[in-house]
Length: 430
Image 1 (cartoon, helix red, strand yellow):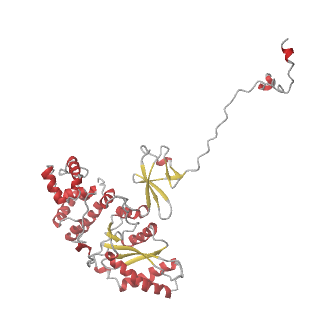
Image 2: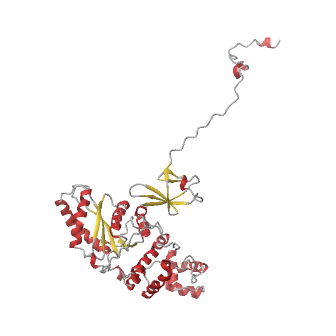
Image 3: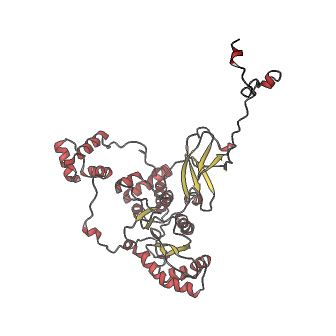
């Protein structure tokens, strides 16, 4: 059977189809998760019997749309909109004036997207949208997981434990978390790793706009330009490779469920740790796992068995060690080496293949500190290069001097010349 290369989104769509085929979810639920109609799900299930898994791969992949507008039309529109007299035109009025004055006919939505990408238009929020309204819970376990960190003196000066990383399910309030040394990317990845091994991949995570999750806009850069640049953090890249969506909260009230749970923990958990005489980070995490989380989930969370489990399996193609890590790209030099962290690394001879020179490879720094390099989906054997040997210039051979002439090549006729008295001048005239 021919092997089909699929994106993570296509794998997830295929998994929903298989769940609907096996009767684990209804066709309507699968359609909602896939973002398509229920009728289309029925058609895909019928085609799956003949075509197999390839049905989730679009047949027009890689081809330009027949409805794609000419790039010259976009340039003409942007040139007209760059006129200073048009600086305050909105998409609706600009669309009308472009057709009337420049015979440029595009839809209002297309023009609005062009103006947002060019940074000359920004959507204005209505006042009603700024008012916080109560958001209903999600309907499935693992459909949305809120993720945040609370900084607090959890041991009341009995030890250095200040950061609690927590994951709480939006539908059931089921919670899991760890005390960590610092609120940094590696420690947050480690907590997520434990959650994924227990339950699988959640559909989406909800967090604040901390620097671990989002890249700040540059000076003079609009939000639309930053989104178009598609710069992501290490956690953002990991979530994308895992096929997990990310939703940003623009206020603490937006993720009120986890914020309120932290207030409860800062009251109850501090007292429980005090009564348990916990003084170290290891003992605090042991207390969390064995006592606090079971009690919390039993008292405050809803039974997860009453909700459909929306978690997805990890799959053999997803290696958590290679995803939940620090990743950078490097260029392979002509001698099949690459530099990383001011050090040189040599690719093993048996892993060298044609066409590798000047190509990019993926360098992974795992959470345990190990360094791995991957080229075109294959891990390479690497070794750190030693210091380069110093270049020693050999002396240039020269012709040996003649020892029988001028005392070995050095004349002595000037020795004491100025110490000898000069003869009288009248003798020189004779």
